[in-house]
Amino acid sequence: MLTREQVRAARAVRGWTAKDLAEAVRTDGAGPLSPITISRFENGADSRGETLRRIQTALEREGFEFLNSSLPGIRWRADALERWAKGQE
Image 1: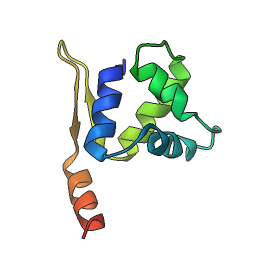
Image 2: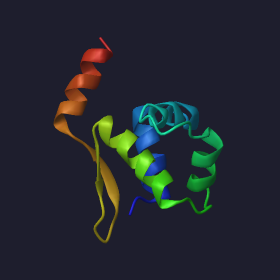
Image 3: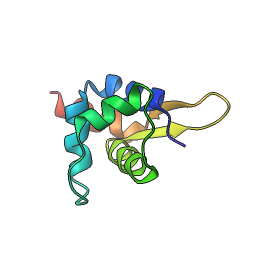
Image 4: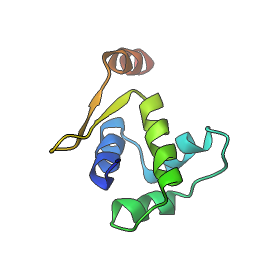
């Protein structure tokens, strides 16, 4: 399951605010997600499974992989790094 630390870390790596992530989630066609909802989850509030799935899907579209071993973490897929580098030129 996606953790609040993973969401916070992915946003930091991507340089996104909660509003940026909410906009990325919005593109899934299921309606808006408030930046406040993201901030509340990152700060300890519970979120519905569907909300977490939408957040995870949006971050995976950006090229993140979520590691869920005994030490959950994140990493970028190699193609994401290349795509981001081209976008920053």
